[in-house]
Amino acid sequence: MAKKLRNLRRALVRAVSDPSEVITKCSPDSEKSQESNMLNVTQTSELVDSGSEEESFTIQDAIDQAKSEMPLHLICTDDGKIYDRNAIETQFKAEHSSFFEPTAVQPDPDIMLEVVQKFFAYVMLSHRWEIQEPLYRDVDGSDIFSLSQTPGTTKLQNFCRHAKERGFRWAWSDTCCIDKASTSELQKSIISMFKWYRNSDLTIVYLCDVADDSAEALRESVWFKRGWTLQELIAPDSLLFFQKDWLLLKTSDDLPIDNYKESPTFRKLLSEITGVEDLSLTNFDPASPTLSIRQRMSWAAHRKTTEIEDVAYCLMGIFDVHFPVMYGEGDSAFRRLQIEIMAKSDDPSLFDWTGKPGSNSLLASSPKCFDPFAPPLIDPVPATMMLAKAMHKIPFVKQVQKGIDRVSTGLFNLQERVGVNAQHPANYIAGAKIHCHGLEYSIWDVEETKAMTQSGGKLFQYHIIAESLHPVTVTLLEPIKTGFGLGRMQSKYLCIFRVWDQSLATGRSTVNDGNHPLRQAFVGHLLISQPGGIYRRVQVKERIVAKLAHPLEFRMIVQLRTLMIE
Image (tube, helix red, strand yellow):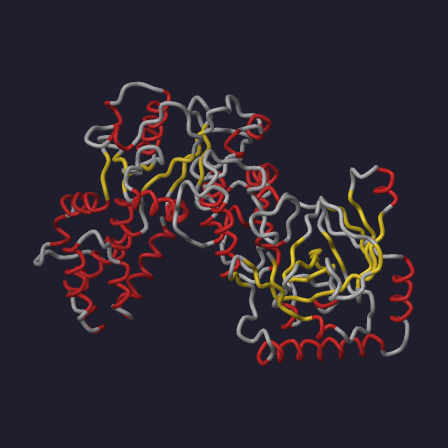
């Protein structure tokens, strides 16, 4: 609650310093509320210190802020009825009418903020859908306590009972608090769901398949295998886990009674089960530069959803992107998710996946393609490694190499401003083709491995020699042409492509191994040319990790280009 009070207080300060923000944050559902704020925002900042007008402005702003952060519909744990935001505001004003009397002596603004926050605080339910769940139409005009007894109704009633026991008046469940007959409400709910869980004062997790306190039973719960529950784990500040019989789960003795996320032992267990590291469990930030796209996708690699489209929709909040919800589009939803991510981020790990591609060969078909990988390994021929080590022993080679890196970085930046890519230095999609910016390394020779020869065509594995790079061994899902390449004019020309990373221009990388980012290992993509100057990404079974072979490499600037990939 203290955190939300600080947020409301900051909203009040912003409203005083920039009154236009109040209009943005006001609920669009209440014309009366908007008119009230329109009158208040015309006041000067000196008026804030003058008495009753400060109190009226402050409490209405706090109400509008609280409404904007809560779901569209909530269950009242007192009477079991469904209320919308405006009805909740009306009930608050009826119970606290003294705050709105012009002649009343108003309390301290912090006290009023606390009153607003306590009244509007709500609890979210996280669970797996079962049979006979009560829907919005079942509860609208009635109450949850009058419904006929089914497993779903019993779960909802127990959830509201536990919420009320913990002092919360409002509760939310995705079963009955979304009017799915309204397309606009369904879309807004899906887009806002991450925010609602993040703003909740408590999220109750109900595990219908966990019957005891053992960590083994928790590990096997289907709750960890569902797509929507990923954001329901990460977004909330406070979580409580309940077993099948609605008793608190007690996997250890140090679990706090009000928030399991405060327990290091329990967080460690959650990390082991989900692959989500400790920091993201407690302080997840979708805009964090240290959390790669591939890493977040890997969290969903083994999760399933009932609807195909939900594979993408349930990840919108985790990547902080939004796009229209269109059930029936099928796999296109995950393609649209990747395109939205590409438009917002230049993180090349979006393309760091293996397996079956989507409609574009550079885009994955599902989160399964981002299954966590083993640590990257370089597979160089010993002779090239020996040559590189020998050159590093030559006096001043390190200094010359650093000079070359600085010159290359400067030329990269110059080409970004005045070269052929100046208008589109980032990756973008046009004509169903991804225009991808990066470094192209021509492949000179392709040879079958001994393992491929012995497999009788069941394994596609090759040794590849590319310009400027250490030789690599690739394992593919399709065959490629072997032998020496004759250059870009050859049909089915092959190259290894390094997607552009901003660290190549800045010289700063998250990996601190003492090398310039140009000389660090990178994930390469095997591309094959198609008619018309278009490329296609070859399907790989294992990621290709490559590295520059020569310490003194001058050709990097001429390898920078934008390719069209279909």
